[in-house]
Length: 532
Image 1: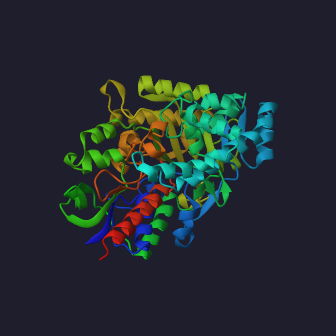
Image 2: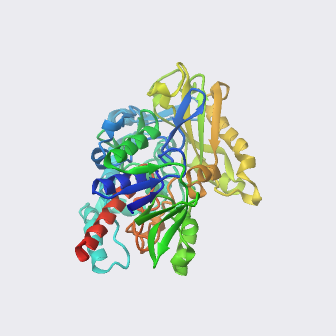
Image 3: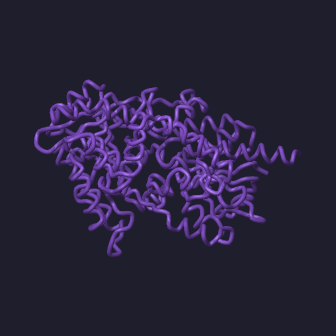
């Protein structure tokens, strides 16, 4: 019998498998698709053109996990962005962010001297709070109803925030409760400057920058680091799939068995305890514990027998919010986009290219999506990874990732995304072409993934890239629901290790790391109570 069977070979499942196997457990990962990696995969989407199909950029993966799994020895390599972001603006202007504080201040000064002066204090404020989050990311949240143990954990985890000065504590309160606009209005006056920072508040967030709580999503995107530089982003050489292939190699070295094309139909239980899984093929796999790297909604509504859950718990899971409003395209290009505001090739092609010139633009995109189902002028981030990783495309050609917001998970009036996908993709291409007039004509091939496509291909409920909305009611001790935040499901022997648990979405590896920690703690307790 296996010690553990893990449902889903996405990055968090692989991280959990590695730590369990390293501790001596016999572990098998069963993955529904024919490749490991979940949404962090690299695929050929047109002859000669390869790209990160879903997840597309690196920052949030915890350095401890990179070191523990020795990922560089297995091919992991990330190229940092010298320039963080480039925003084409209406007319003939643009804004660059990154390349050092002095350079960004000089850019901001073209729009507002006050904003340039405010930038160092803004960065310092975010960094103080981000440091607290970095620590919390690799800790298990206190579980409501957990008695004295939970109270002690809450006190210990709150110590980092309590040590902050009063101004920093006010920033914490603001970031967790205010809208992105409200928070940014307290710092800056220029619309392009606020757009440059406000974009992070709507990434994977089907909401307006005016939505209360959206400031936290802004913060979630800045607590990462690349190559030792905090807050930086980068490109994985070989695409995001190179990361998960490196993880799979580390797992194999640790003794993990990985089985592909093995979708799970049911979590098996006996006497209120998980005992294994049944595959769609009918094969049953017995294991002492089951670890789920799928969304909580998929796990508890489709894979677990309703009889094994209380009606109250099922109601809570049914009420959790999903849908990040994301639409994903991969595009093969015969030439680089030529931007009206900054013609010719340059460093901006190696940055995150953000087409969303103001918070008002972002708000209109969300309002349009709520009314129509998708925005006719969407928020678009384009990256062109072939500028730093030329092996992704034939010589002289390029691949581009288009990550777009706002697209409703479910279209109004009973319309089908299968019927509207092409028109929505055209709106994204039109939006980029307005900024770079040669863009549409340069396209050789493209693929488009609507929210239902993301669900069908990667198991992302509602197309939600975060495995559940990142609002305050679904974070920390309330993720996925209050009382089950310790990676333990209400079925004994069943654990969660995916982004639907703390600290949430992004390629962090933290849920897998933390779940493995709790599983091993339970195993030590069990062996101490009942030694073999």
